[in-house]
Length: 262
Image 1 (cartoon, rainbow, N blue to C red):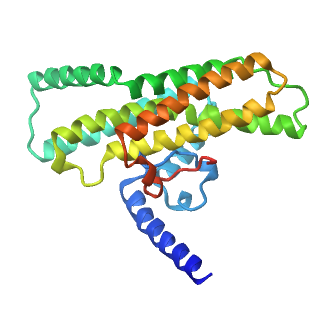
Image 2: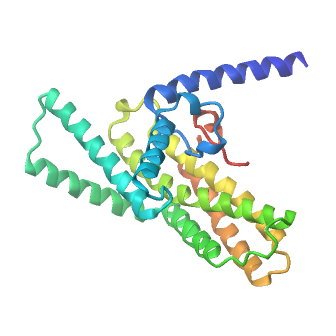
């Protein structure tokens, strides 16, 4: 019992240390952004505060905060604000960017994107997301919303719908950052690539768990079960690629804020 308590205290100290780090740098790429499940960080989180402000603005302006168009407008506003801040920093540091610099930046970004798209990890992750989206788009939901089996089914669908896009998005960010870190190894004390890869990896594990649950719940839906099994196979192959490309990913769980049910 004493050893168990000692281990628990040690883990809590790690989490507290990471908490300070996350909240200092804003948990944008360290967090899965599942705010409704977050009790530990939400009260001090700038990202969550911005999310509440966004919802409040939508209410005042008569907009739906879940509308895709409204969300993209908010992303655009946030990106414009970020670019403004970057411009201020560049000006303050006395850095002058020429048209040639901009053109070279875009050419380099294009080269990196092409290199990423050739990797098996990108291909497996993108295919996993695509097939999961297709499954959820036409998945037959049984009648009787209050039935326990239906509630369980809807919970797993929600989990898949939330985490499957993160698998694809964070995988590409991890691969992109990996290229940068290999080019400038001294500039990244805590690798962004490993953080992003961990979010993608654990999101994938959460999805695989939900797919297993859906497979059981859809015992009478032969066609859907076959689709699920094929997606699980793709996901398992993606998991192996993650562990090959980012071998430390399995030990990085406490370096991110993750709320998936794994």
